[in-house]
Each structure stands twice: as structure tokens, then as C-alpha cells.
Length: 215
Image 1 (cartoon, rainbow, N blue to C red):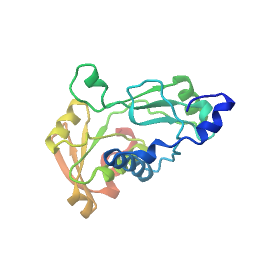
Image 2: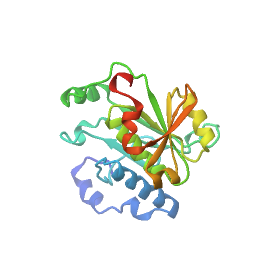
Image 3: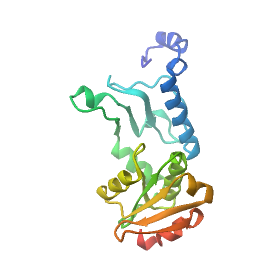
Image 4: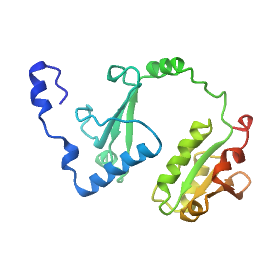
């Protein structure tokens, strides 16, 4: 698939696509990935000829490229390797990794005139329970686009476990969202340093987290 020779191209163009032969579990994961990208408005193209050099990658491999330069200026390339830690003797652990060209990233930040914050005093983790993962992903994306530091809580863990993880990672605030909160259009905003929380309208969440100077 990665052959650059001209005589290979006709063979490659007629090769089957592995996404057309996925098992049920992998197909569900693949469709969920595409849905997540669409929900948070990340444009993507399915490339059936991406090849990563390591044989421990599983499921999805990816590249991130600037929209104006194309594949010759790839910024990031990587993929999932859910079985790698187990192969090395550890317990089964989902994983993802990538290589990144720092110079290219810096160059693109300058070209797009991205202003980086001097410091981040508020770090927020969005904790999701029930069937709220996709909603939580969109919330994280919106917070980041507003200049706030936000991460998504680990899937499949209880509320208590996610709160504990938020504290371990240095988060100052947690946003808790579940099925009930989605129905009401509200979220629970918890100040982890004070152990205080309040219910906030999701449309007013950014204001509730504070002004630019408090971020």
C-alpha cells in the first residue's frame, strides 16, 4: 500500500479496503470514531493507503495534516496499540501514540497566528456518566475553543473514580454530566479545591468558570 513505484499503483488502486471487512466490534468502534469527529466538527478524510511502520498498531491509524498543505506536510502520525502493553508483560491496557514534528507544528501555529496563553490556572475535567460520553466530548471541544484547558474523563469508570482521577491529574474543576443533566440542559460544576459544587446552565458554563484572567 505504501509502494511509490508507478507499476504498483494499478495494483494498489484495485486492492480491497480493510474497513469493508471489519468484525462487528471493530465496526462499532470505527463508526463511533467517525461520529465523534463529526460531532466536534473535525474534518477528516478516510485514506485507505495510510501505512504506519510499527506492527503493534491496532484498529485506527491516523495522520494530521494542515488543510492548506496536504499530506506532504504531515504534522502528526500515529494510531492505537491496545495490545502493546500486554505484549510487554503488563496487564491489558488500551493505548494510543503518535510521532509529531515539532518544527512543523510551531510553523503552523505562527502561520495561523495562534496566541498561546502565558499560563493556565484552571484545568477542567469533564466527567461523564451513563450515555453522556458524546455530549461530554462536544463540551470539552467547546471549552477548548473558548481558550479553556479541558480534558475528557476516562470512559467506563464510576463517578467517584473519575473524580479521583481528576484530582490526580491536577484538575482544579470538574464538570459532571449525565443523562439527567442533558435532559435539563444543565451541568454540575465542582470546585475540587473547595469541594463545592453548583448546578449551572450549560449555555452559561464558560462564564461560570471565570474570566480570561482566571484561566
